[in-house]
Length: 407
Image 1: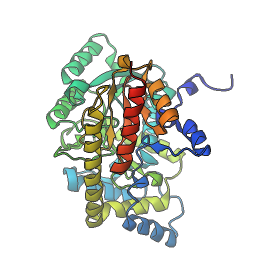
Image 2 (image 1 turned 30 degrees about the horizontal axis):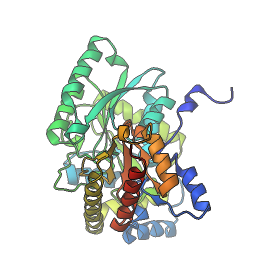
Image 3 (image 1 turned 135 degrees about the vertical axis):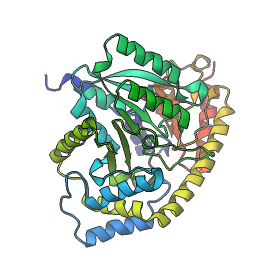
Image 4 (image 1 turned 90 degrees about the horizontal axis):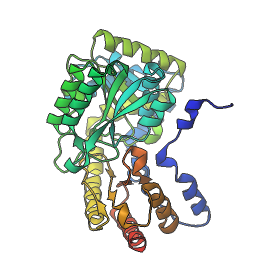
């Protein structure tokens, strides 16, 4: 056999409809793409960041950087976390990666033996599961509670951890992953809920990993709390990067922070560094541009405030329109830029969300993503980055499509 058994798990649900969309575009169809969370498509990367990239090129910053990342960027990340979250992180605790995706690859490569486990909360970011499975790991699912604004069901989590410990299975669990703000729900975790999750991770000696790539894209008066503000004195990791908050997805700059100095945290740092050595370096000029993006707080504040204000209006308006459709129930997001409506499939002619999404693209030229790719069957994800008139047009087409296929 040419391919490994694990290779069958390699997929990305966000992009699985792209080939269909491309074929439709070749025929002259104009596709409304609400499938990919790519801010620069609608909010051009700020000029001060582009200028920093150009300056890095002019200064011939085109050699390999340190495998763990350029010092200027690691120091900028540490200062940012000190400024925003009062985290006294050493730059040595920061590992620069080619986006959060590479950080996930490093983590699962380093930690997973065949049959080891990770706790994932559904709905989860779509790449968590395939990356985990392609490294031999298997998920233990917990839930964000869709009936309570997608916050974590802490009572259920506590019972599950107690049961895993009693059954002797907890020692195969390598980490517990949360996403805050959440992709695909747009939820910003309540601080008290997050504190309970941190306490449970500490009680059961679980490595807690928090993906906080949208940490400054928060609105509707919601308050974001970083895990580093609560998880003192225990092993944990924070994943973040420049793609979303600093509006530069194509730069592929992420970072993994392991702030504590206990034996486990230091071992994680060293092992992830070993993996960084194997890929040599992250894009060097992009690292210098990302450092300027973080350090220039005046320009960043202007850019992020403009973007978040627009996203808030677009997401709230789109949610209102979606909730006017009796086939959908939709929780309003308070962070990131995603909306995850639930479809009453019993009232449609579709057997599942995959068929719904595929037919919507082919019939109405609107591309969204199936919820089952995020562990949320009977849902679909909309990216609310496009201008309001485009979102209005797309949702009007979705509503027309639903009327045509209602029972």
